[in-house]
Length: 394
Image (cartoon, rainbow, N blue to C red):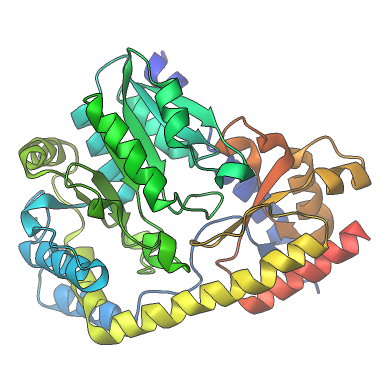
């Protein structure tokens, strides 16, 4: 069977390949004294709050399962609009909000709406691998800009200016970022957007971890800069609804009909049950629970990152959001006689029974020496992982 060149260009999602290997090994450890600890997938160990689950059950029992508008339930768009006002003090019109089948669908829709064949989109290295593949699927070209700890693993405005060329169409950024948990300084982000806008380009910002910011300095949405910024968000991370596959995007109002037309043809609509359930995410009781969980994620970071540093797995930038630690494993590789982070990840999996993610997925700059730990697991699991890593590295 002949496979399209478009599909052939999409690299494997190595995070999932490692996850499959970890799951297979975990089966053999199920009845042992040392079951696998999973710190490889960025999925909260919390589930949707009680009010959200109850709302889903009500929707099912009442038969509220027909198609919704492609842009989402009007009531949900209004609730999201209210949330921007309450949390960020911003007046984001509901008419500019499009509910999507997860942030992935939002990114795909944005890329298909705005990228022509051959267009270049600048993005940081390291960054979430699927983002560059959304660009590729729209026949664009992702241009990865190497970053380092000095810039918090985020591109600078000067770097964007230097990299901009005749084929450049825009930037795709993430704040906070996966895999680093670091955010773009608001002043830098404003300068980036102003330059991109002066070139007639687009600024897309993946903000799915933004509500999980731990530092007020970085906790403002890019939408505060300008209403031409395109923001991508999700119910998966802060709202603990990963498998519900629900997200949203905020776009300039003139772009909404284009996104709607694409969404009608590609997705028809997001999950109706998930949308009715998500309405309850914004109730005061649910928000209070989410905020308590955000503090728990911060406590996990505050324990785990210093513990990694003590083990020689240096985290050069303290994450200011999300639930990841981007750790330099080069010292550990030298100690264990390993080549790079890929080998280190498998050694940790096979010998310490802790699943982590090698840097390979996230780009090319320094990624052979970095691994990503997810701190979305319980404090108990993190303590266990540290003890096992300590044993391995001793």
